[in-house]
Image (cartoon, rainbow, N blue to C red; front, side, top):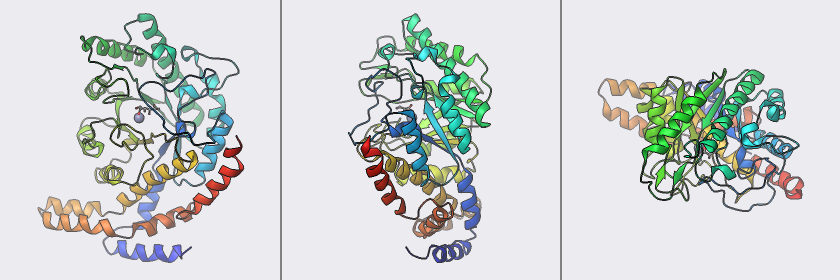
Length: 415
Ligand code: RNT
Ligand code: ZN
């Protein structure tokens, strides 16, 4: 290992000469909560006592050994992964990760089924976020909140109402707000002859769900362009979810980086939405040609998103959550890599002299704006990142990898 302290001092001097305060960047970066999704640990399987396949147009591909099979294993894996993930974290659960000795259907879930998760989170100081599970269930095959069958639609309305009560329970237990992401896979393989009826039912379902107050809960609606098997029509499209969230001050939009046409960038949408909505929820993922949910990379889009959040001064207006599921590699490594990349992109963005560049722009000096923006592409921000990881005791560079391999041979491969 090289001299991390020396590297940091050099970088601090260099960034300082451009007016960037490295210590402030580190402090801001460290305090921004990133909500880590629980479902990377078991390929979106969950712990309901029914072994159904993953449905709803999403797919976890790969068959890497050692996935978590019980809530205890999943929590242990999250604990282990978090040793190598710096910064303030929340844990994002799905309703299907409930705990009960006997089968509990989605319309019957209650806070008691999440008590162990809450105890665990409180002990570690984590906030908890939540998601109703509108997929992988026999009653979800022909749609959920937009279903034409009123009994089935009622079932799902009840599910989501209960999820919001669980969200309030989490907020009360943790003392932190619980962001609930409402995503329904409802759609169809061919374009329906009547495209508005499912959307009117979906709208009515949400109206009824949100009619009940849920203290401590922040409701977000996630849209999507299409799902596998549901290629031609999505009831909760971007326009639907955006219009719905515009119609209510207390519902915010979710932008998942994989939920748009492949040439559309979430980073380019942020300021437009923030001109109208006070808050947004982000699902940071990596779509490869489709909503493939690859592990978050330190790629142009992740960096552009973080850069926008910093330049827009919107770090306290946007909830950042991860959403991916890769079953082809070590799942703990997948968490560590994706979570570290998310925060790494945030730190890099915070090391740009955004205010100086914006001042140049306001004075009409676009030449300097371009020169300065480009200059920062090659600054040694990795030295600052290494120092930040060292300071948080999270492993510098690839130090975490050997430990994850060791945990794999001692724990996960023995499952
Ligand atoms: C699916 C959505 C949704 C899910 C999770 C598991 O395309 O992105 O957020 O990934 O709810
Ligand atoms: Zn998502």
